[in-house]
Length: 355
Image (cartoon, rainbow, N blue to C red; front, side, top):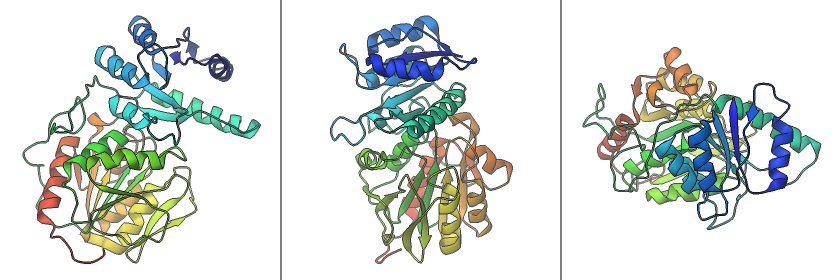
């Protein structure tokens, strides 16, 4: 695959080239150091994947370059972020909304083990994301009723769905899901009459920035640490280093037992055990099969279970696995999911107590 590095630090370029040059299936194109050159290089070379820093010189930063690339020559872009926990400067999640498909945190410190861990994650991400589905995108106003740029607007009604009340909405996602989570929450009137819990596979340390970004939807956001009562009108984001589960109307964390962290399966299974038919589960785009078994457990207890349709997924791994095992009672487009959330907000009475 042809891979383009967009990075202004010569030391970072040298480090990444050292990790990538030895791979026989990767052809490194000449690196570029600013956003404008990145746009030109993508249009000229048509790389299978771009690794891009966000802080770039020359008047066009990474988010602006991604926006231009996705409008003129769409291709998979993975962000290399070094802006972890830098208030006012972290545009990581803006880059995902602009069209990037995934994020890797630059290794800021550590020895050989940290380098080995980063190399394994880098190569795994590069090989999967080079085949990710991308579409041309354009930045949209928050007032625009569409769900994801480039995808159809919400339909008047989601087919086959009956109006129903909801006691808890559980959302699980991975690669490509953050911008969809944002737009789905934007479609849900704030404050929601039920709690919302989001299990999103995310780089450790990025969940506070994820929550701050999602707060732009108008909802009250909480990064769960365990012990929180589930309250209507609050969106709880899972921590990145442990699983989040429901126990007796409260959230609890536990050490992860699998590769995918936080585990969507763990969240969905716990929701099935406590909420049963009163819950709704949405499984969004992502690599692997996490969430499929949990969604099946929810369906078996009578919950409304929804898997994203394959055509709109960046990677149709998790929703595809759910559909294959019969875990999804509905397969919906993003527009249809938005319509569903609007319906849930209208048909669920506002409770007076805790969930």
